[in-house]
Each structure stands twice: as C-alpha cells, then as structure tokens.
Length: 254
Image (tube, rainbow, N blue to C red; front, top):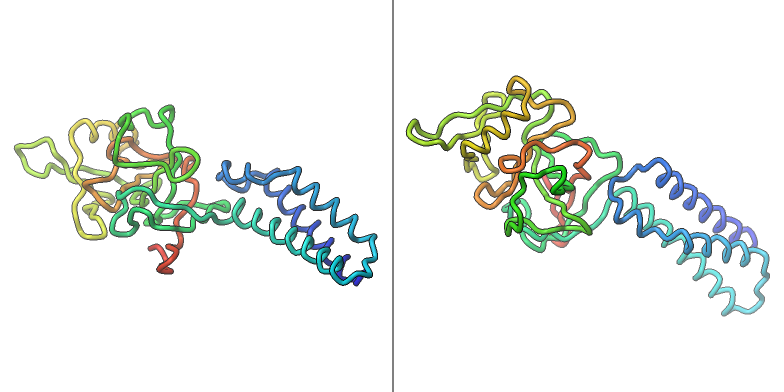
C-alpha cells in the first residue's frame, strides 16, 4: 500500500513539474486555455496527496477514497498538460472552410510549438490592432475560442511568389497565382480579388514574394471567406495551431 502511495505521489509531482515547465517556457500560444490551469488547485492536490502518504488507512472505504483522490489528481493534471500544451477541442462556428469544415463541427487543434506548413488548416488570432483591414461587424466569421480566432488554410509561405492576373481585360477583378499556379479551392473554384485588395497585398509583399514570418491564408469557401484577400498576410506569431482531427465522424483534416 505504501509503495502504491509513493508511486502515485511521484507521478503527481512529475506531472506538476511538466505543467510548470510548460508555463515557464510558454510552449503553448493558447493563453486562454493555459490560464485555466489553477495553481491553487495544483498546490491543494500535491498537499493532500503528501498528507495521504503518511496516513495508514485500515478502513476499506477510506482506502478506496484515498485511491479515488489520487486518481482524480492524476487525471486532472494529465488533462491540464494535454489541453493546456498539446491539443484542445473546439467548436467551429463559421462556414468559410466549407466543405473541409462545416458550422458546428467539433475539431482538435494541435498547438505545441506548432510550425506552419503549406496546406495546413490553421487557427489564427486576429485583432483590430494587428489586422486593421478586417471589416467591422462582419457576419462571415465568428469567434471559436475566448478571443477572435479564424480558421483558414495556408496557401503561401515565406519565399513564395504571389501574382495577379485580370479575370478579363475590362474589369478590375483579379485571379490569384502562387508560384505561377492559379490558386483554386478544394472544389476547384478560383479566388478573386478587387483592386484595393490587390494593392493591400502588393504593399505587404517584397518583390512579389511573401516575406519572412508571414503567411498567405484563404478559406476553402472562396465566396464566404474573410481571409488574406481582405486583411492581408498573417504573422507567424498569430498562428496558434493546426486543426488535425474532426471529432464525431473521426476524420483527419488534410
């Protein structure tokens, strides 16, 4: 019984160390979820389990209660690590990523030191300060988390060339090209931009190339997506993580 208690205490201490290291090194950008880790509860968990370590329960019910407390503590700390620093479940509340993601889809977002890659479906933190060109009170997007977050797909990474071609000679509507290839949605629909959107993007490009630490993102639903066409390139620091799994129908996001 004593050996079991010691093992449980060691596991709790190891999990607690991982939590404090994760918070100290800020391995996750999901600040709202990391803030849900309650230090007071963790201290209470450690204290109660150390206290239980020195009590020899002869009553079977009390032994079971002590085991339940230790199991609950280990479960809580494990969930803090998983959801605070590795993945989080989230609800999609928009249609800009249709057909890849639909309104009310439940997804898992991986965010542990995530490095953005081409074609990844990512979660982006946006604000009026960082992206002043986002239309106010738009109905195309809604918040997924505790702040304003958009879900988009990465179409261009640093060093990629972005170019534009008129859809026809008589209009100021342009098609998008990245590295000389026309950008198409998963359903093969083209992406169009107007003259002001083109000028915004050109002002952020360097010799038509995406600069370092910047990414070009689009929604999979060209007609209903508020994306880089409207608010420009996004910063790497604002890309929180990538959507890796759709729950309920158990679908890997590609």
